[in-house]
Image (cartoon, rainbow, N blue to C red; front, side, top):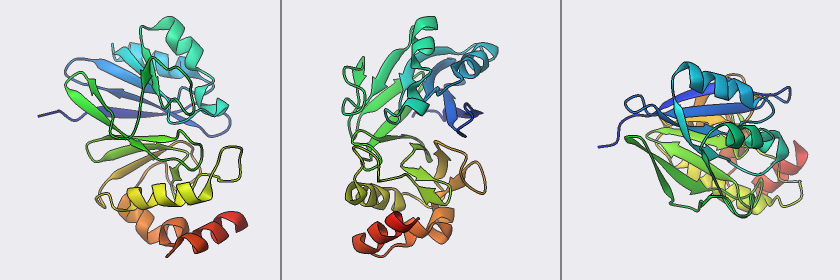
Length: 207
């Protein structure tokens, strides 16, 4: 049975980005997620924990999330794993249902297009790293090149049905707390409360 991987959240830019270090406490094998503009913070945390980075994971291809990719790849043996619609020719092409073995744990992939065509969510146990698909109390923009409000709505519907205790680790520090749960989002996130696609699109255009 897979063990519970550890997740460390790191403030990684002046744009309130979060990067993440996921690692197996038994084998000290790890994955860097969205190193953003201060990848040295993630590398330093991994070094202090004696964690070896096997993977560099990107939730999507926007520059504020991937700016630090080069340094991570230069200084580690990590393989770049991402959805090819956002990052062409990664070492590992991820798709909905992909699974990555990290030490004695598992990271699952949900393809959640909308903010970008290749946006993905990383799930390990009852914890999700949501990038810019879902924030605490908000959701990602759908008015950028490649964005699609209809796809974002349907992606959020998939997240809404996860167990209420599922912990949400967002891509930015935009909310009232740095993490939340699906249960909290169901009660407090207006985008989760939209009863249909039309109301979601209207709200996303107005806010």
